[in-house]
Length: 442
Image (tube, rainbow, N blue to C red):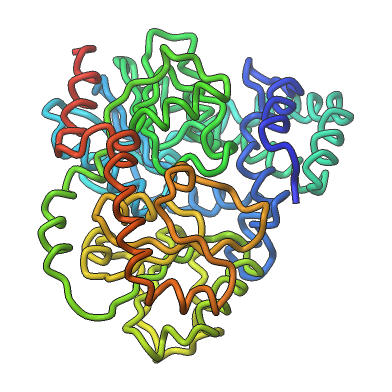
């Protein structure tokens, strides 16, 4: 386990390995943390591709079928991660945005009519013209790179591979920016993942304003910090407080709510009408061992015997389906992935999670929330300080919490204050507030 996450982020920003004015150390942030925390393990072909930083090259092979488009629009939305929750969030804004725009994608599965494929902007001559200079830089900075790999407990060779991946990504982004002559505004799902962060860095010295949408609960600092974009659209006052306490300037924060909650009013009526004994279990990619521990607690409580259980997999590619089947088998629970999470919550009598954004959505829909605490080092979310969740550690506690009606009612009474401070306004207008800000540049 890595210790001192925020200190490691600061260390990474100080330990510069710079090329073309970009700090390549910062571009490896997600890789270093995911690998250092044991969340990237060799257990499949896909995981091997990610660990050896080959994903960009593999995806770029599909660019051979795409023609380079002229980019005459002044707004580009960026969809870097194949994560349905993040995609739906930013596309809710795109859907209501009335002006022309392009959507930069990195994966052919994300393609729509406004898409431009990053890898089609690869510049062959530039790549090889600067390649040996980049190699010389890595050799010159090898001590720094070894220090970084040591601090994160990541193989030096794997980190070198990741730096070469960054070099390839930057080349493609530079090719894009040569085509995007009228670009004024970037709207991103994230500004810590490699491609989005590199794009923010490349445009920071130009007259281009970058906005990032807060894509989930502020669980782990490495997924949100530092805020590289000019502005971040936050969900509410509790998120603002979290960012400010961790060094984000107040003038970077724009409180808007979140587009993914704009449809919540439609489901509140359904939540009030629901009957039965339905449990929704949320599975996040928290590491295979932790997922197995979590699922085993649930299995030993016999919830699959006494309740109708739906297990919602994480919308990313690492969804832990095999672990669910390993513990529960194929028939005792219903496994879902790419479905409307609000619909699932509204149909449920309980939501069970570890630490997850979905917990906040369960609270917004007034559904009793049970949080499994796997160990004392598990990250704590804001709803813990409001006493919104029933926190349990083992199967016996889970059985008792499911039948304690007075406890359920007491927890539900804490929800309103939390919703007010966390979600700003659940009025269905978060998207409109975001568009209003973006449109100032028109």
